[in-house]
Amino acid sequence: MKQLTIPILLFTVNLICAQEETVLLGKVTNDSLSVEGIHVFNKSSGKGTITNQNGEFNMPVKLNDTLSISGIQFFYREILITKDMILHNRIAIDLYQKINVLEAVEISNHLIGNLAEDAATIQIPKSKINPMALNFSMIDFSKPVTQNIDEIDRAKPPDIMGLVDPAYMKGIGGTIGLKKRETSEEKKLKLLESRDDFNNKIKMLLSEKYFTETLKIPVNEIDGFIDFCKRKGLVQLFNSGRKMETIELMIKEAPNYLKQE
Image (cartoon, rainbow, N blue to C red; front, top):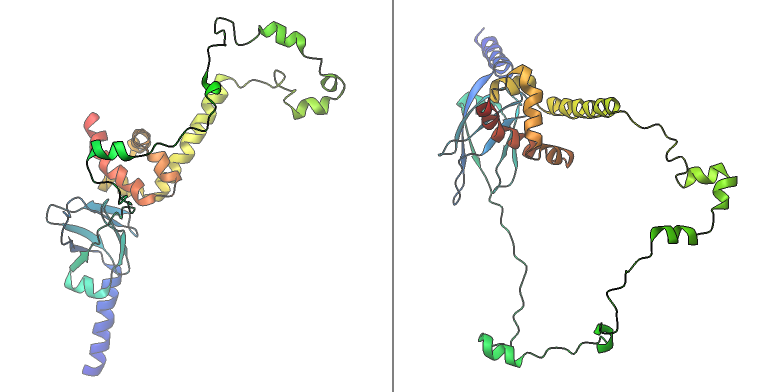
């Protein structure tokens, strides 16, 4: 009976870990840089948060959730939530600093570092341009540079092909002026369709729950908030495939949007 109880107990623990959401206590570390304000995002649930000044954060998770951790000065990391992390209710994440490598600069060995002496020793190559090419004394700038537009038009021969071959005119824009002009209402409709299409893509990236619970944006103001973020470069970030930076921008701008109301 005891031998049967142990597997059942282990199965029950595994089932609870897989189904129940628990709040994980996490800490982000780095030896040299501040780890405050690091973005932590649960890609499985759509919830996000940022670290405090000690690099600590709380995040609701389930087994096999994926956490993404990102900061401007650090390399991006993803962490898969394991059974051990849930049982211990702790996770430590070490971030690696991005290092900018400068290009090598070659210093000439014949310079001594004194500007006055170095300037005197530097040989300036002779110009290969004929001096007469830079002599503008023979040009009368008082005369107009272009002809009158009517004179130019009169000088052109008639375009016979355009008169006898309608297909030729279509190829070079002969239908200009004949094409129906878009009304202001049609233009507005196209803009609205384009706006709705982009906003729906952002809503697919994040859940409605993420907007309302994490960012504290009322459900009826989600579109207005997305439009607000567009002025901060949201469209460019999303269209270039930088999804994490897109999310970071919205996390940063949410308090500013709510403050203006």
